[in-house]
Length: 261
Image (cartoon, rainbow, N blue to C red; front, side, top):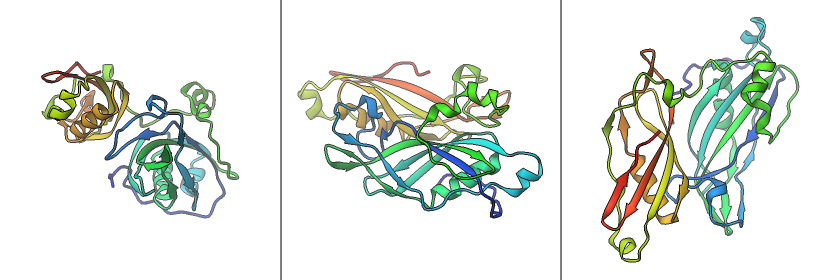
């Protein structure tokens, strides 16, 4: 499991409002990795969660006059319903992120189904904390940036835009996707776009296909990207998390990389 967030927090018994919003699932980890809307079938069932424990609102924050906040976490669940990875994408307060992750690790999951078959997937969870009651919601629009500002909330941690980085992250280790001879002979060619995060250590996190001409090519691209490494991305000299999109063109005699962004 990743190390962020890493500060242990005491859990006083305080009621909270936690809106858990499930964004569109992504096929992931060991299979063709596709966003739900990009997968070429309507015969699918989204990831299901059994919320066995809700986060608690830290008493220390209430003592400071903080009574609400938002956390976004990207999770990866395999075809057996096992939580295999998570990545904190944004939070208004780190203590809330600690509470959200601690709860997620105790939840149970039913995997996404495609044509009746369980498949690995990624989903973004949005926690909307308030120091009263408990509510579960599937509406991600509740936490749009404009809404946060109206509530007087701002992310103290979130992915840095690629254009805001000090420079384009320099690759330390990259490899082109494998292109099996049998696929080439069958004429399976085309483009694949992979979206992923580069964390503060330069490690690729949560790669997923946003667009692909062929499912098989999507799996090949993600398998390659998962092993890439970069120099840590920085903004004003400080390491940051950033999101990247990379296009691959599978041609008759190999694979080329278009410029990422």
